Image (cartoon, rainbow, N blue to C red; front, side, top):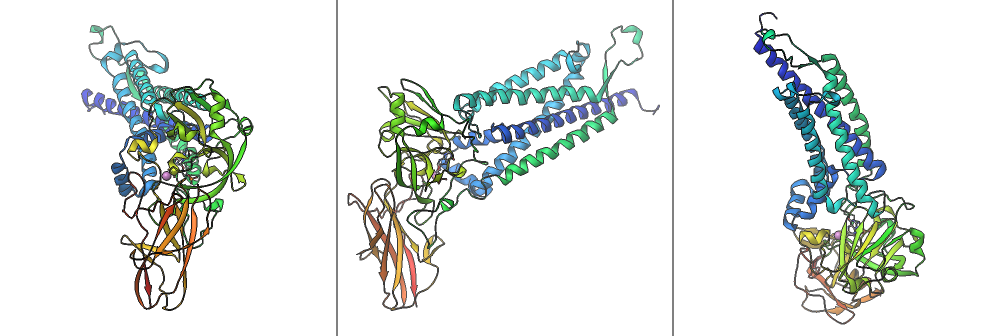
Length: 551
Ligand SMILES: Nc1nc2c(c(=O)[nH]1)N[C@H]1C(S)=C(S)[C@@H](COP(=O)(O)O)O[C@H]1N2
Ligand SMILES: [Mo]
């Protein structure tokens, strides 16, 4: 040891203090992650790990959104990627802050400065305070639109404050942990150097305490266990298994059984709303802002209404598409009790997940636009928006905001979650029809029936037809790819707001390939367009053409 030159020795010490900084930063990041996971799990507060990807998703245009789908394995893959990047980000920030903290505290100016709590020098304290404040303010600004999220259904006005407060607590916890751990694992000594007598000011240097560092590292490692368990529980509760559930198959019924109703959600873990703390706030351009409890809401006249919902991403022949009986109250009655002021332009609906969508005030005042709490005679299940969701007939599923917590009346154009990406501007589905029975398969971009059929034996072809809130008057079927048409039988008419189900019995004359297709007419007699359009940006159009092989 004696032969190690003093310069090298102090360099070695220097490296060790940087390691101490990294360790302090890592432990602080782990503790903050635990605090975030616990807040999300028990209090429903959305941590930046989840909020930043959610915020970014709203800023992407449709093309980037879909190319990310392709890159990360669909919506679910992208959601996972978002969370994993968030967790990595937190850890990365932790390491950087810890390192910078160590550098500052071991700098010449720190060595001359006074020490405050946790052994932090003035420059180190200023660094942490400025970095924390900047992070807090920066996050509040960047995340502003998603701050009202609260996955336990804390009322909208409180939810934003709760998130802002939680951000403060998480960041403060992180910063104080960096200080505390760094202090705990290092020892300040006042080395006696040669020439001491020439310099009366004795400046401290830090030396790492290996045993304490080891204990701290072990403690940090141990904290990953509860984090893992919380993340595991939330993973099991996540939307991955059911997001994108379709209602397809040859057994489609007029009313979709609740547990088979199609599902789409932007969330990694859906809201799990506590109904007793939940409120529906009405605000914006109204005479009186309201905060309605579930019981308050039920005081309005109750309505039962069958309505079909369909996602804008539902390709022709696909199943993001279902029909149910809903019970609730009219949005109009609720808005009128708040008093809509002159100049109202749009209704802006927000959910407990800070999902937002909008539609014209005229639509909000329509008789059939509802706030519902029952589906098919049972309370709304969690995945479909418990305790209350919007039903907006004639517009794509996007507008039917689930877990609704707030409605604002706006005087200018406000953009919804998907509208911001560039979907729309028209959110009314094209009239469409498709064949579900016999079962079809999509291969290389074209549909065919899964099985072959014998000649001269009748086969029953069934399908559905939908025209938003324009109703279906009739459906034609063609067995020659659209050359000639025959009227199909509508065996379930539904209402103006629902799909109709149709069937046609056909006896194929001789072996060969036939292209079966259908075209629906809305109640006004307008035919379905045959112009093929993709789902972007206003929903799909065109005929569902299915090849039938007769043997
Ligand atoms: N709060 C909230 N509401 C939402 C969504 C969401 O992610 N969050 N997704 C929308 C989309 S894209 C569709 S298609 C429908 C799906 O409703 P469902 O899952 O009950 O079928 O909900 C809409 N409402
Ligand atoms: Mo959707």
